[in-house]
Length: 144
Image (cartoon, rainbow, N blue to C red; front, side):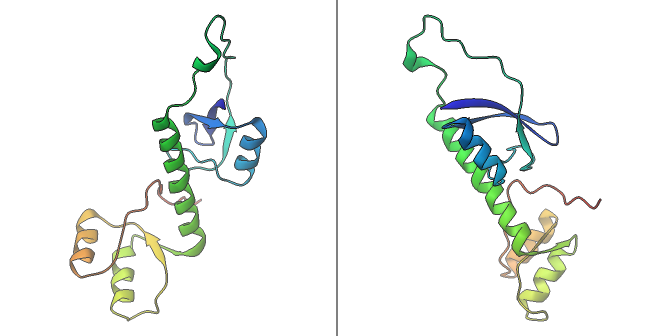
């Protein structure tokens, strides 16, 4: 396993573990490596000091723990979920609660949507039986 210091296009720094340098390159090219802070898939390797083991035993070289690997896998899954929603659903912005309600009551054709809602709006939708869920890692939509 190789540990890389990674940077997203928003300047967030984080670590990633890969089976090889080629594995990182392939996953990054396929937008499968996402920033756990903002979800950006525009990720590159950062500067790292080499890990020289000296007299340490070979098996004790900073291998990732099971918790680190599980967290990285979960972050990748959340990034993939966000990407899937953005590619397959309509962004309705701050009108999310209103549009979700119209779809639920069949005043509009059914379709996948995502956007923003306050906690109160989301709670009211749930009480009405409208199926909603927060999207982890979804950052506010850029309008530029």
